Length: 231
Image 1: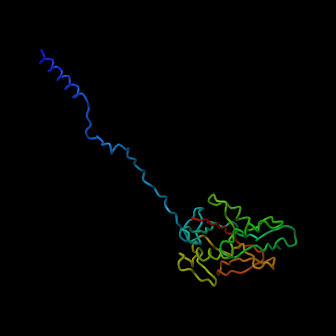
Image 2: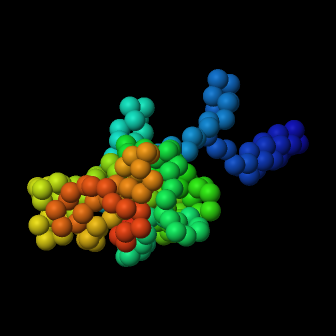
Image 3: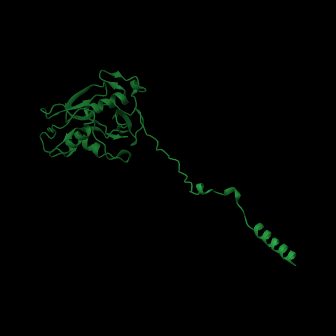
């Protein structure tokens, strides 16, 4: 009788253990009990860089680049089209001399066109101007366009049109003799006054030979807006 009971108990024990799942492949020691954290891979944002004559973020043409020395660059972009074909530099009100204005704040260097533009629009009795045309332009969905300074326009002619004073062509500009890139043709206003002692004269650039000279504010020339941005 005892032997039968032992046999019966042995069978019960065997049945019990045979019904349990044993996962030997996933046993962890006490030292391995800490959950393992899987880090997501770091996806770096691509670095955007432009070259001269590339299409910029606003759909215009990159015409000048400055290395800021801190890993960033300042890009200058010209609008893809003119904002006016026959525009007087300013009209500031009553006759007989609505163009006789001197704001004295207009620079000629690269980087001064923005402040020049704001100073022109802020002049007393201002009603219309080449500067206002540029500030009213919203090409590419951007509203930071302005009338270029003397030196900014010179960079447009050299790096896009491919021409400098005395009809010297830039060998790096494709088809400079045929017009270059950017649809630059004819003569254009700058935002730079020639001499603050002279209320009439403004720097402009001639399309026929690349010559920069000064003309009366009442003359009619083309207007091309520009903008700058840092990346």
